[in-house]
Image (cartoon, rainbow, N blue to C red; front, side, top):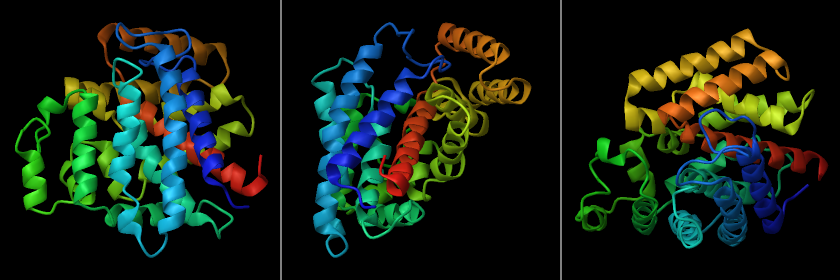
Length: 309
């Protein structure tokens, strides 16, 4: 069945709610854990904000597909989402989620004549490659507003901390696709968007769907998070603390996956211990949480395509 823009927005909202409510999601805010300057309720507000923005980009894509893809304005939609969030919460709760879910919602709107999610990554690739200079400017401003963690340690050719960056983007006619290509070596969300969603479509989404077959939504959320972290060192941790620490966190996640079973006391004890360790060290796998939300979103979309529920 086909999805309306409102349905796409609603499923995105649900996906982000499932992700933040996941317990215990190691090293992140969840239903029983806040950070010093970031609260569970902040993420609930962010979920409400993202719904309308997903709906809007889907509606715009319906109108622009397939002949005017340069007018979809993915970057501006990301910026709108980030701005609205910053007006309601005091910290960056959803830059990464906006960067992933906005393009995914747009790509889903191109699937109106299909009955599965199989073409999602290819269609998203086309959309990303049709972004314009104004999208690059909007994305740069989104990152500035969000004050994304660790960016000062990873300057790129178009450094957001450089006041001349916007002028350089305009002068060199840099698109959002170009900007993401420049940063893909050190930022996994950028890599994901310019390489057809490898983490989401090959790791996160399949794990979420498979786990749902025998376990609860919360178990599926945590299993998805843990599986992504066990396979993909977290960008936010590596930017802040270095590759060695990020790789060690990934190794711990893999040990938990290998040595405990879903839904058991052993798994819960291991997760709680891991959660406490990451929390005390301030090692926040925030990018993994973003990938988890996006994977759940794709899972919900696929289920809705097939069953309508």
